[in-house]
Image (cartoon, rainbow, N blue to C red; front, side, top):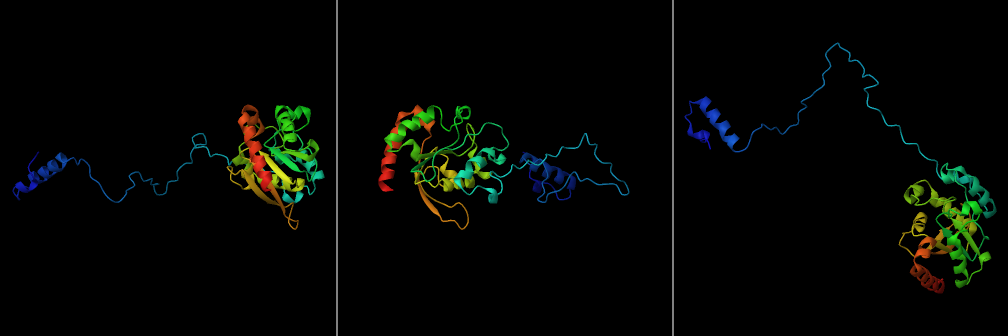
Length: 261
């Protein structure tokens, strides 16, 4: 290593500076640093000169703003106020399926049913049959109802979505307003109890997905009496078809739930 700059004679300025630079260089400092930032590439427009605009072909494209989808259900004041009016609205309101053209399937069953069964969406076969849960999942439900002590005509069967939609984007649908539409549908149906078959559906009504039971306080509209509806959530019918243990789990949950309610 070079000698420390203090070892040079004071009158040897050039030699001292050279030695000082060597000393810092040997210490690993190769660059000059400043604490204050500096703009090394300032763009200065010459006085009196007007810069030509950038050619359109070279300009950076500006992304078009993402088109906002309409809120599901449209204006709240146009929503049906009775279950009889709900089905035509459900089958025709454009915003409910965001402009897609798949066949919709209506809910079925009586108002004020002993039980409302709610699934995420119709099966693929349901559109052709014109009947909600007309396929394998529906057969499973039909076989379960007598075990639960219920007849078919005592049950109102409905879906969160009007048409088949595998792997729905629930977060996106919630942002588009599916939650209030669903709550309105349940309030119009006014069942004694609600069985939710789908792990993500309760979250659309403001409840944690892990919750098994919930008390829903719903109203058709302002000034209408509030309804308290007990809800039980379980796996969807497709999962129960594949895993018999899920059916046993629903049966035990049903017994515990009906014993408390």
